[in-house]
Image: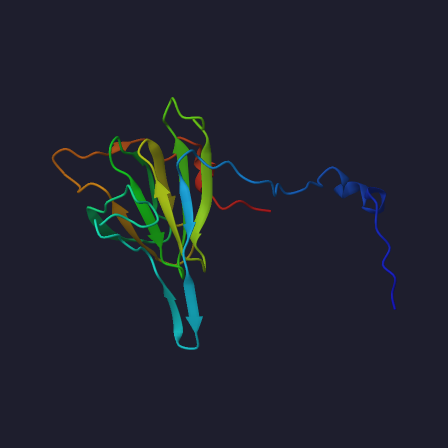
Length: 186
């Protein structure tokens, strides 16, 4: 049996010493009111099934009882596409990215009286998981397909879109910095 001996920092070449770091695995900030809801996904030898949403007898979401769906929309994003940022004064969103796709999600809290004002979140939806993302009004949101395949999503909103009076306020795509939407290397 081989006995492994622990190493110390002195065992690493001096040319690498200054470049060493430890990745941050701490729990990330969650913007007040934002929810990432894990959904059930079932697999068998014929494929998979994910239950996206259930509704109560009044048409409200069981996972968010105050949220009554008024419109459902499908969107496909081609590789290299960035759709960011915008926020709503009245509308709330629930997003679902197909589990076999991947989209980079960006959120930041623009609500000046929120306990998480100016905090941001950056994470991937899809990527083998079935999750719903609830975005409250006033939280700026965007998404990017920084991957190599088209990605599909369905989103549910509690207001119908009105092109004559849209409840949509746009912000620059790079308001959090151009590098916000790039794949982190390392």
